[in-house]
Length: 299
Length: 299
Image 1 (cartoon, chains in turn purple, orange):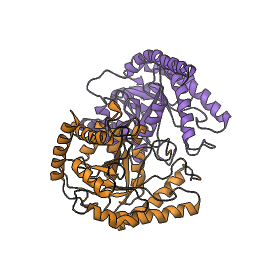
Image 2 (cartoon, rainbow over the protein chains, first blue to last red):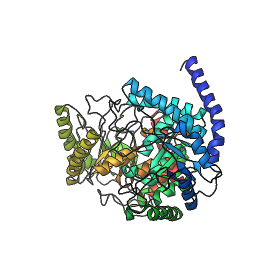
Image 3 (cartoon, each protein chain N blue to C red):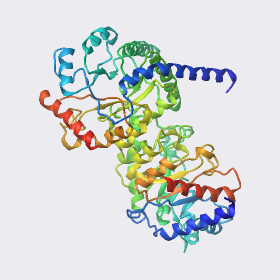
Image 4 (cartoon, helix red, strand yellow):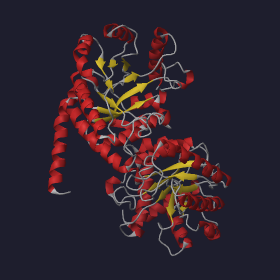
């Protein structure tokens, strides 16, 4: 390492430290202090019944749901709407679910440029809303042409994630890599792999999440979430047979091992519903919330 | 502690270990019944000083080393030699370290055929020797042309591993996937990934291992080894800065989190030295053994 590289790295490091002091406040507001770990449930916009945000939030508050995970599409134009709907409520923004155009591993520079600009717009809006981070998948299987799955591409991804993470920190939020099952994204399938990429991206703004549906790829829920450690910023939950409401797939819907990891880590963020619904939403949704709370107690 | 005190302690410890160690037969019997988990140390052929196997085994027995991990090259012609050298000793074969030609993910059918035939010869010899399994890497970075890192290649690998695993079972042994750091093998870097491939290969003869040197890829030693669970068949150990004798890299050489996972899993196989040596082998090797035993106790 020559002097120039050293200084660049040092300055980058200093910037991280400087930037990190600001977001701590925000993240801390969503990330309560150490203590008895709590199950903080969150819904996506389509989860609760209701004609508009206010009806949905009324419903959520009755169930004790404390997080809201909107999609990222058009988020910049919805900041005021969402802020107003959240006013005076015991609900905060959890993560933002994707919504950008293009993808980060695109071979086509125009597709990559679309990703860069749309993702940054969402990050900025996410920051305004106090979100814990913006969820992203490096490349769905159908997104082609995609950079090949090589060591060089991993290095490229880490460099790109570093830039994105630093940008997110400036906006008091993060970017969250989501591993998916191999049917949807072969590139990133395991929570531990996402955590390693987050670590190697060398930005406190790069995080990872676990999704109990996609985690059928894992051999061990507990180990998978534990491997994410300090990088774990969000969790998705669904039934484990059909990606429906937790409980709708019966005994398959066991989250206890994963919850045990979250409790041991004193995980301070959200467990957010991302799932369909087979039965009557007004029956299976409260039942799902109850099931998760029971399993959390057992974990 | 001087060297004399150290050796006295080591030998005393070794006697305890030797007395407590049940005879190890392969697979079913190689995996001792549930009980107090023990640290079963193994050496590769180059680890112990000595001009021949007998001298090496004498040295190993004095240190309480109960496993021997030879290379797979020319193994079929060495079965009698190794069997004779092991007779009457408290040392069993642990894993066999590779030694085949070609590689399983080769694009070139001739290279794949070389892998298939040489690997099967080693598996058969490993079975005769009562080995716990034959270690293999799917493709080192330098092995080209290699099938691309795609979902289809993963399916192909699982099919090929299934066949290999079934062949190994017929020979009373296994095949053991070894994840390496990305500098050596980008294809398979994480223990959890190897475990998922072992699971999806759908053969009880397909296993995975962890190597504390390569596990610098992991975010969490404990979670990584725990994720391997029932698939974990072997462990390699080395110092964590220069891949030398454990302890030669000072505070970096902390294996306690990983050992904790092995103890909790009641891991019944071996922890085998695969490393160089910076200092005087007759000093640093016994010191390394002592260090590992101390850390095992602390774990």
